[in-house]
Image 1 (tube, one colour):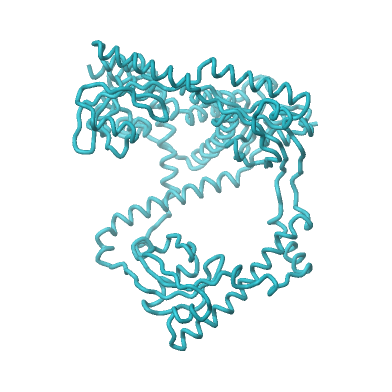
Image 2 (spheres, helix red, strand yellow):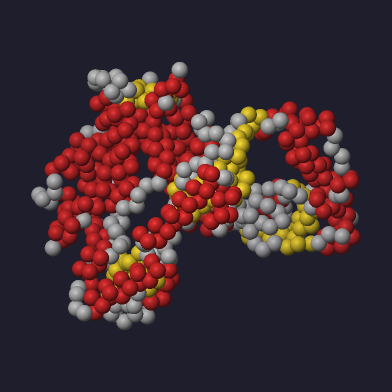
Length: 607
């Protein structure tokens, strides 16, 4: 029974392993291509990475494998999905080539015995949470070993896993070499412990430059603006951008679609109530790809880890009975509770998603067609008004910025606007992303470059005026400090100055504190001054302040000693990850990468 259940899960297991093997497949493809091969025109070079050629065949195979894995979800990929996956795959490919080069340069190898040991003791992390390999909610390595030592397991699968580890382990050894220089001292751990455990509470008088200093008190000259512009010219560089109008369509289920899903859930409940096995109905009908293969089994979960709408029903449902359809933002759920202990529960579900029907989809697409037809004859604003749709006017799209207010991540739209073939006044196709369909009308473009002084002078004037006001506010605060030193209380000084004394709750060094900011000079003073003392003038980021330390909870060496070893281990791990990431980033930055993809897409661009 156990092995049958394991084999039932084999499709999912192999999908996960395929995802894990993608990097290895690229390694193999690159090694194969380095043998040469015929057909330079049929299989052209798409990139040169650190002196190594990457040919179209290998790149396309890698990209298509990534896209195929993404489509396993059953959802069709939008143009935006494809763009993001393509760029991610490209960067992954480059990183893989660079890592392979380092492995070869350093002569990092792995033995057969290390492969066998890793095979049995280091399962791919993607499998850890799969129910087939769990016992009482925990990963069971024995179940994993039995699955892969079962004679019925396909031999090609085992060979793929072996090749995967032959790629993975040398990279692990390489990382070990990189992190060998990391070290965390006891002093480092003590500082971290203090930063995260010490707390302070302060009273303060905050001087807001904008409110305390009138505009008439400061003057900014044109010469000062020009000097600031020349000194900070790099700050005013700007990418290419475009102005557009935009209309969006959300592809959402209608009320009729919701009613259909509810009716289907009620029908499935009637089948179970009529005697059909809940698990078998779940396997055949449930829309949840994770629990459906397990007969709807969701495992044991704490109440806090369950959707509140489901938890409210599940913790009141009689054991073994089937709930009425429970609606969540995802759809409708039929629940059956197998066991319940305290605030944890073991239950099964049959999930019925609310899906956009063909009729709803057709009505939306008909409206999109109508809008497009009118817009091509007139303009997008007129078309949107004609069909009764809202239009966002003068929306700025920036090259390299994927996020568009009102549309979400949609990098294909800026790409369209800066394409030289796109003309002012053109109407885009409908671009699809997770929020729906979006159409743009190009109003104007601005090339990348440095913003002229005339465009940014007002902003510079405001910046310089704010700095001058802040210095005036600092002078006023110094007068407050002198008064405090004369023996008066902070309250009396604030009253005399027309300011208010504010008080914080207890905070740590890394916290954001209203009025004092985060990581500011004021926060540092709160942990550096003795309790009861008043500071000098301290910076809060956008203002200045004088603070008085009311209370401080100091870290103790005794408490530190209790957790010291755990802290040392945690900090060593974090520092290692940061070091390795910096090393990989440096490897990428130092590498010479020639990208020929655009030349292959558009041969005329190379001429």
